[in-house]
Image 1: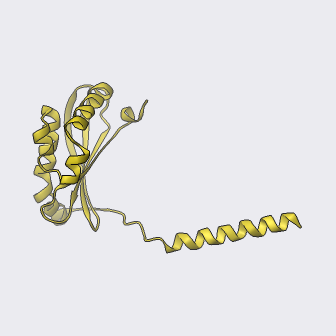
Image 2: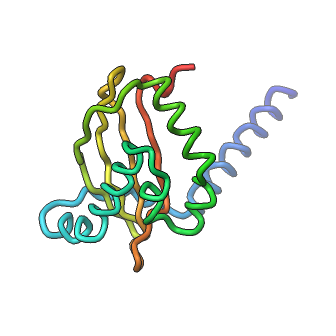
Length: 151
């Protein structure tokens, strides 16, 4: 009798969990932009993306952050920028080059994905996220690579 109660309870939990998962709002996946849509995003995002990159390379916080939203400036202040530079120098070595890989867009944000090449790692991905609403400020920034994921 004890086994059937445990099974019944387990089934009930699974049913409830399945029901809850269908109530959640759908995850909105960004779409890779091509042609005219890509060009329309690049018209407002490419220059700020390159300002950010050039500021990073020049180690110039003012240039790096000039297109940040207020929230982004709070999260990535001068002290955080200095920490980012130390981490990139330590884990990746000297910066070498960048390429714009893709442009993504969802309902609220557009993202430029760059591949950065460093002395120790040529698989560094940098995502620069822009608000789709005017004035299209930088609202997110992420770096990822095999070297950055190491302890």
